Length: 371
Image 1 (cartoon, rainbow, N blue to C red):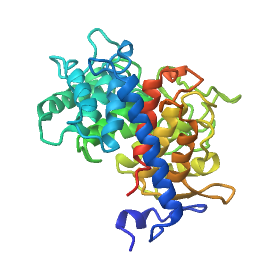
Image 2 (image 1 turned 90 degrees about the vertical axis):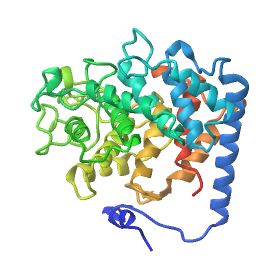
Image 3 (image 1 turned 45 degrees about the vertical axis):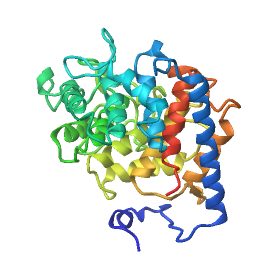
Image 4 (image 1 turned 90 degrees about the horizontal axis):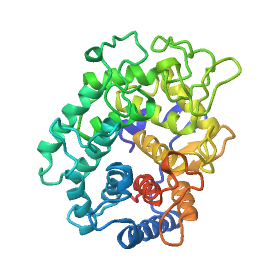
């Protein structure tokens, strides 16, 4: 029997469907073995090489990498009491600021770092010990969102978004982290901050609707998402000859997931258009539209978005069905280094750092975890 949520996603658009397998198969057992072996090797790397004596990972980059890695460990079943995790949590607590944020002093990335910390401490908060820290961090986060408090009304392309820090240009990546952090805090889709974020996210989609009347909406109407419509608009994948902003994989999955968390349903034209883009560009060999740039960030958003929709299989636009969890776990196993880490040869967005990339890989693998 399908659950209600699974039923509502059973047929989304022609060519994209769920298939539920009722009993364990040899293939599933093999997939579980690949998952476990891959995660175990990553943990060996983090214990032996990745983590510094103070519990940090790549401290040169601030607390963000430590939060990403620690969340990845927690989501793959490592206990908050395990020394590997406990030391990192203690390290991260040291970044809690008087204004409630969890960030490195004098940083330009207060919103980004606080979002990652909220997700980490929420995953570790098994006994309520982080309740106060999390409540203060959420309050800080809400103040970081562009709204009337920043002199931005609903007609502004900044409205509802979040940037790396307070008053920084909003973008879909950081707004996606804002939505994830609110979701981790148990915030529902009807919350005002979620709905404000939805306004910004909708304006990052290459689709003209009543929710999106920006100058870019109709110039490249493929249903995918780009980086930001704010400050003149920008896509990391570049522009079209017509002046549109190109869609790309990591932002499309980030946008789609954020819409789902904000309560947008499967029959909404925004979701249908985004899923059509997903079907056309399904793949794990690259970050669609970006090549190998941001590949492991892409793997994480890919997995989190499809998991949010309870999808087990996706049919691409060529009619090929994909067990995305098995395929993703196998791809990550193939790319894993001998020491258990991952490394992107394209170092853009810090993906030349094996700690960060291993954190992204663990987050992605957590959605491939056998049920």
